[in-house]
Image 1 (tube, rainbow, N blue to C red):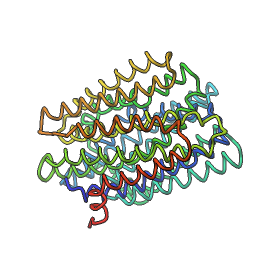
Image 2: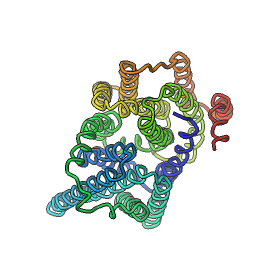
Image 3: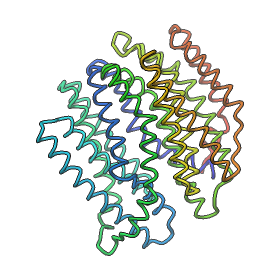
Image 4: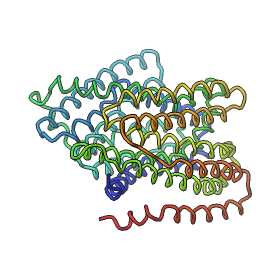
Amino acid sequence: MENKKIIKKSGLYLIGNLSSKILTSLLVPIYAFYVTSADLGTYDYSHTIMNILIPILFISVWDAIIRFVLSEKNEREKEKAIASSAVFTCLMNAVILVCGLSVGFLFHANDIIYLTLMISAGSLAQIWQFYSRALGRNTVYVCASLGGTSVNLGLNILLVCVAHIGLSALYISFIIGQLCVFLIAECFVHVHKYIKRANFDIDILKRMLRFSAPLVANSIAMWLISGFGRTVIVNELGASENGLYSFANRFVNIVNVFGSVISMAILEEAMISLREKGFDDKYPQTIETLFRFFQSLILTAVPALVLFYNIFSATEYYESVHFLPILFLYAVFLTMATNLGVAFNVLNKTSIQFTTTILGAVITVAVSYSLITVIGIYGVLIGQCAGALSMMTARYLMINRFVSFKIHWLPILIKMIIYLGSATLLTYSSLYINIFAFLLCALFALYDNKSLLIDLFNRK
């Protein structure tokens, strides 16, 4: 597994994800003055429900698309995999729209109508972007993300800041933005050209769904780790408190963006490597490098965001600054667990991937429920952190049952302890201390990741 190839692909995916997540995070200060915490909490809750329903309803078919298209040498088999999965996606969307909209209009439930449209638009955007990746059209992935996000951001500014529509504006902007992602991807990839009777193969579709079915359960368990906390907060503390949690969590998307793009690049390179020479023995070294990078990233991000939070110190969102240290730690654990999970896809051991996720989910639920009545949102944060850490540890141990996969943990552990102590103190420190801490951490990050930066600038 070559770092230069991973860096190159990660760079492309970073541009796409940068547009959809980090640029959206830049609108958070605007939301702080135009959207109430209750509205933001309600929208975030709907988004969480959408994220759990899409993998269930579509049986995580996008994972099978990557597996059956990217690693397949036979062009005819690729066409059948694309056509069969596309027909399945379109049929499921038709059923969802008919059922969801009928219930929504019958009971005059706007939340159900919006959720149905979010699921439909979100699923099409996600699956068509996976077609772009599977067919090697990575620039299409980027263009679709940029186009969809530009529309989303423009509508947010127009409807939230100018028209003052509020909650409905958040839903409308997301739905139209996702439809734009789908349309742009289709304009370049032309999935419709593959949809022919001769290409539809029920046996291939069954094989694809059998491959991705265990990953549905994995997605549900993953939702319990990443999304269950929002449900507990809404039910136990209210939508307003979930708005505070959501506000802080949007900044943590910085880590999630880097983690997801690197994971996508690693998965593609691993699948190509599997096709050519089997499991790559350089994978552990790649994971160690990533861990060091993410530790440096969050160490620098905390003082930077504490400074940034001063912009809205007079708003109700300011108190969420104290959530950042634990949220960033959770994000790193979850990101590294995800990258370790790539090994199970390559080894075709997706059922074990699910088992390790279940472990993390059970710990998340148990700790969150037991602590939320005692220490509020912090109980959920600790629960998520404990769940992600246990999943990461379990995956590391399970991988070593099949291949030799050794990581030097002591330096990682020492840095994590230093981070947690210093980051917590910085959220209570003065402006000047945070400026000094940011400069110091940035210099350390450059030094600690110098080899990665050299690879970045010298890539071919």
